[in-house]
Length: 106
Image 1 (cartoon, rainbow, N blue to C red):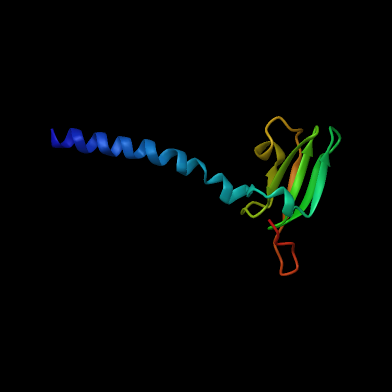
Image 2: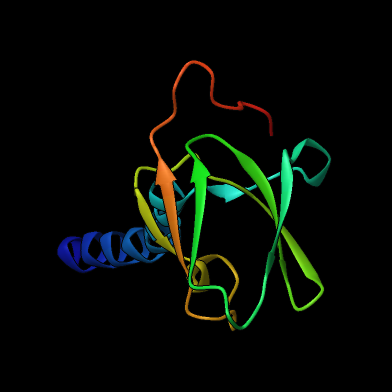
């Protein structure tokens, strides 16, 4: 009986922890930013293939008129725009490492 309760608690704990673990993507690709602190707006068109941003930079990503503010403070140097804006064109976002003079707003 004691083992059954322990197993149930462990299983329940695993279910509670799972969503928090999946949010680990933010450490890789960044987080939603404050649109008021964006340095610039990047207009994504069907012809856009690549975007370059600086690490820790916050930009407004305009995809078909829908603007998504994003702070690129993750670990990855190459991010798929579709991971940030589902349904967007297949665009690579190249994130340069942050430097002392990189924008740090947002």
